[in-house]
Image (cartoon, rainbow, N blue to C red; front, side):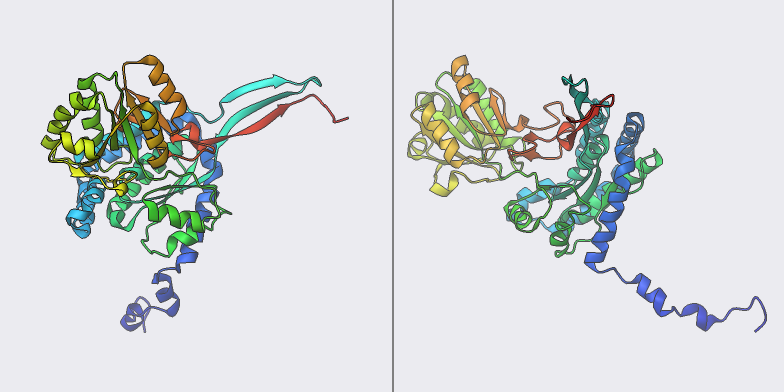
Length: 442
C-alpha cells in the first residue's frame, strides 16, 4: 500500500479499547470521578475574588435569559414524558418552566450577585491576657451535594448561592426533570467558566440511574454537606443511607390562626393568598384555624373567595354547619400536606387550642397568626415552634427571595447549623484565626 492510501476496513473498525471507551462507566466509578473533580475544584472556588464571582453570576443570569427558548424546549420534553394525569398536577406545576419563571431565576441570580460576600467576614475578634488575638471568620463549607425533585429552578438557585458563598455544588435532580436540569446546568456552567470560574464548580450528575443516590450519599471523602429538597420518600432514603451531614426540611404542613381580634378583610386576603397563589409549594397553607368568635364573621366571605378559586374545603363539624358545601374533615386531613387546592379549616375555642393544634400537627416549617393584638402576636411568636413564625402576612412569604436573601437553597427545619430559608450565610461555617507574637502555653 502506497503512502497516503487508506485501509477502509481498518478505518471503519474500532479496537476493543475504543469500544470500551464508548461504554458508560459503572455508576460507582462515574460518581467517584465526578465528586473527586468537584473536590479538586473546591480550593480554587473558595479563594475566588468577589468581583470574579459577581461577574460570573451576572453572566449566568444573562445566559439564562438568552437561552430561554432552548430551556423551554428541554422543559417541554420533561412535561411530555411526565404526563398530565390529575394526580400528577402538583408535581407537574413544580416541573413546569415558563418565560416568567426563567426570568425569576435570572433575577434571583442577579440579587445574589448584589448581596455582600460572606466569605472572609469576621464576626468578632478579642484579645487574651497573654496578648494573642482570637477571631472567627466565615469560610465556605466546601462541596455541597444538592439532591432535589421536580423544580428545575433549584438548579439555578443552588448554583448561584454555592458560587457566591465559595462552595462547589454537586447537583442531582430528579429523573422527571432531567432535560430541563441538564440544559440549565450546561448554560450556567458555560457562562461561569467563561467568566473565570474553575471547571467543576457547578457539577451536574447527568445520569438518572436510581441506584446512583445511595452511592452518592457515601462519598463523605469528597462531599461536605447534603441538602435534599423533595418529598417524604427522598428524605427517608437520605436519612437511611447518608454518611454525610444532612440539612433538610420535612413536609410543609403550614397553618394560619385567625385570632379573635383579626381584621376580617386582612384575614381573608392572607388565607386565600397562602392557599391559592401557588398551592404546590411547601410554604402554602394547609390548615386554617379560626377563633370561634370570628367564625360567623369570616367564614362566609372566605368560603366564597375559596370557592371562586376552586379550592376544596374540608372542615370540622362547626365549619360544615357554616359552609354547607364543605366536606367533613377526617383526622388524616389535619397534618396533611395537600400540595393542591385543598384546605382544611377548623374552628377553635381560643389561642391555646390553636397553638396546641399546631404543635400536634405542624411540621415546624411555617406558622402564621392574623391579629391586631400586639401582646397576643408576641406570645404567638415566642411560643410557636417553627423555622419561621409570621404575624399578619401570608405563609407564602417564608422564602429566601422574599426575605432579601436572594435565591434560597431550601428551607431547613433542622435545628443544627441552619434553620429557615438557607441563603449565603447558611452555606458558610466559621474557622478560628489566632494572631500572636510568640506566645507559648505554660
